[in-house]
Image (tube, rainbow over all chains, first blue to last red; front, side, top):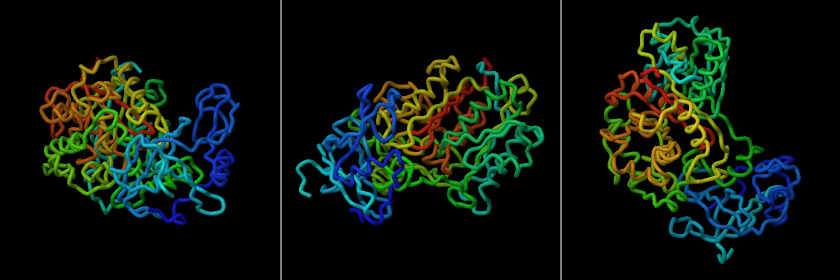
Length: 139
Length: 380
């Protein structure tokens, strides 16, 4: 559904670098606050829930569920419509936008709350995107 | 601000609306501004406060020949104008200025001098949303809706009904872009844009503008038009990323802005005769009705289906036809405010007989920001 090279390319910042280093190394890295013990995303060097500075970067399980999505029929660089723009709820709590691969891009196949797991798609030497596939799907 | 202490004494849209290929965006600001200044019986030199969104206020103030001593360029998307009204009311109350002009002009369709923000690849959205293929609001603003449908049992037919009802209002408005009646089946058979949304559930793309003039209520009776009093206002923000909205079935920014405005106005929902809910897409009136407390959570779609917001219903909503059928240049909030003012003046094409209180609620970005203005033709 997507041509990796034509996708809009994210540009890491000092605060998000650990996330993109993680995906390059095959890890979905989230942050957790050591004061209130909540996980959060997107990255920042302090807790958005309680404002603590004492936060830890950790490798999440990569497991989650399909929280919501649309199936876009509009043209977009690097994509062949129709394709789903999805939000995944990770097992650790935070949600993130992604695509669902190894799965027909149809309402019948894309069931809310179905179990998904992360797979990594390399765009170039710096950027690898975290995508998700149904648990049990063959890559 | 004391309820009713500030009034809208001038209001106008651009002379034409829809497709205006012979005017640039700044000229749309000027056309609306000059119409509103004329409506209020003023001269540009009477304006001492100025606000706009998107364009830098300096550009438009210079173009119009204004010398403001209070300026607001708050730009949080399509509800920016609701925030301008709130800020202007505070500024006039504080004595910073006496007569505020708020303008909007947008060459959304013809794209002549159109100013639009770009998403930088270093921004949160640039890093964590854009790589997954969204192409504008139709593919992002709509993302929470399947979750809403699953939680509350909202049906495709009910979501289609929002567009059907608004077309009924548009049919009564000679200036509306689309006035031919449509059915639920028409909506569900229209072109798919981003499942579950079809084209008739997405807003128009047009050219146009509007302007408002505010002053203190004690001066308002000296103006030619019937004053429209500001009873209460509210504003808030949540997140620039739809994926990070805390609850996909409810907008925190809506809840905060709405509750703030109601508390300030000191009214209850039973006092409201007319409402505008910024409808870039068909789910927005549903979220608006629930998040502002007009109906319990999960019940707005049935409320609309049972024709409570339709012509003849107990709460007329989006009586100009809304962003789905009237016009939508990109930032629609100004047009919602214009319709509330017309209803309170008693001059709307689809006038709600005897309406005394109007709630005008806007969204900015994609549930990113919100602004609410409650107005009345009666001074409390």
